[in-house]
Image 1 (cartoon, rainbow, N blue to C red):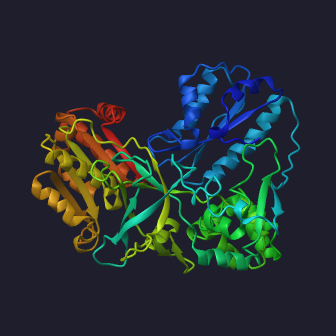
Image 2: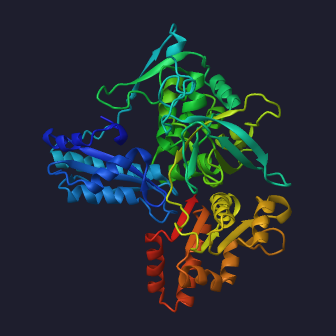
Length: 568
């Protein structure tokens, strides 16, 4: 059976050891600063705080992580170790998937060795045959009461029309958009400042938290996909798990229409994983298309190279594949089963909860780009949000389903503590809230420590976000600001260059005054470069060896004096 840890009674895990030949396999992701996902939090805390006797429980763990983050697969590593400490038996070695490379390839490599190990452990013989079996059974509803049909709700039927708190991942609040304005002064790129109204929702946020947005797929893409599949998108259907013991009865809320499923529930714009290509190959009528799909789905070097070029580098999604391989005509219900769920998008809140308790602000770059196959790809959430423009008159505002996710990215409890913030581009977002909060304290007559911002953008006249606002804080003496403009001069200048030039200032904050350092933005290069510079500063200005400097920075992280809110 398959179970969501959030919906599983942990006591049942203890009872599994009494079931002959039972095996628990944990697939666990890590996000942020080595934290478990929301649905695994209770399970993680149960392992941390409990002393359950798991002797006799057989288990294996596969982790889903990203090597660009410092705490790579921390949750899976901890769970694998902790289960053994509680007496459980590891049937197969811990597997670690890296989403910065090819996480599916990592999983397949692990899985191919996992099954023989399981068979050996339980004294069974493997057949060596792979059988493709549908996980869900289709039922269509020619006649059904419309009141029973899901129309985009995350979990509870009619939850978007009959709203009631508390609001969370499974029960988002339909927030009115009160402000949606352009932040870029010129140029062909767009960055939006959006304000959601949470008045009356009983939702609370702290400065530094994240807000999650449930987006919709573009209606034109949904229609195109329906035509490619020769499907009636308004057919009402249900997909029911063939495993009656599974806690996941449906892949998404059912019954619903194909149009609703493809609009609200299914990811139709990401690069399909190899297992989807393997299933698509069964529908190919053209032998060349069938062979190409099978090759890309294989683990051979040629297959991996072709997949990387044709799918990843050329940036094809499911629509592009079906357009470029016209003989491939999968059943629409099977495609709905195969494609992953459309995920909510998280944004760093760019407002102070003390200054704006009833509104949540975000700062988001609109994503649009042309692929190597000359197609225009649009960011699902940002392009959808860009159309959520409040009316100029007293008309009804556009609504967006949201919920708040707590973060460890927090200001020091003492306002006198100096802070140094590094956030190029939209990495500025949480720091806008930090600055607002410290300015509020200053205006209330409280002593506020040095507040230093390192910000970077391309051109001062084009994409200097919140320029007037930040310069206003500078004039009051609250804020010290260092700005790197990468394209205003011949030689590119980034925030890391400015940090290197101001090592004394950095050390004064983090070394001499026990201040806090914050980084927000790109995890792959910027955050790593900043980390290296900070270690270098500690080593040089603190007269330490590299080993001592690394230990010093590690201690800062443990004390929450070095915090990162990064993405890749």
